[in-house]
Amino acid sequence: MAINYDQIMSLKSEGTVCSYNDRDTMLYALGIGFGRDPMDTRELPFVYEKDLKIENIRTVPTMGVVIASGGGLNMGKAGINFLMVLHGEQRIELHRPLPPAATIIHDSRVTAAVDKGKEKGAVVYVETKIRLKDSGEPLCTLGSSMFARGDGGFGGPSEGGFAPHEVPRRKPDMTFEAATLPGQALLYRLSGDRNPLHADPEVGRKAGFDRPILHGLCTYGTTCRAIIQNVCDYDAAKITGFDVRFSSPVIPGETIVVDAWKDGNIVSFECKVKERGITVIRAGKCTLKG
Image (tube, rainbow, N blue to C red; front, side, top):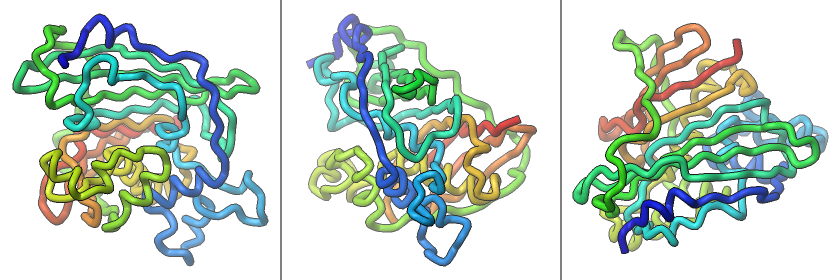
């Protein structure tokens, strides 16, 4: 079944109401690597509600990509083969820091569907806007792209989507590492993405991998965690935007090496895995307050 361009461009979902709580917030932080050292008091606020007060929990900005549950876009109706799908890009703009618990409303729509050719696949772009239910205050805006490796040649436009951020060509201003655990995908999937590609070895092999791979959004969050630790001095509220382009999957247990450049309030970054020397994130851009 080929992608139906008119149908996929008409996909939208509006007014979906959902909630997340402090448990979800702490589980997300654990899933991207916070709390590995329970004696590190700089990390505890992300995974521990001191004095049983929810307001004492700090939120990770990239958690915005998992808080919108239910509703959503039925891509299956448009003819996409999900076994061959990989996350291409992810962006988030924070309009205010995420609260540790909230009831929200989200609206999503397809913004572009690009045909790279029969042998090269297709890229579908989606925008999601999230606001607080009680006040209507905008919370964050998400932009993502889906690389459908098996769905090219459907006759859609050959260009469109996001313009990639250009990282500086000079030597990185700083380099730091973010370790992942062999079982990290099994923990991260409890934040919402139950795709068996990240848990079942047989499904991983069918998709062309030797074993289950780490979620792209887990790599995304883990990289944000590393920037919070090494650039923001654990003040996650400094981050107002976080954009990446995924270039290769991470295998759970590998170490992500982050090369970063800081120019004013923009931190550009690219990532590779230490064990294989393969670049896994390109065109990274973290926007800071001020």
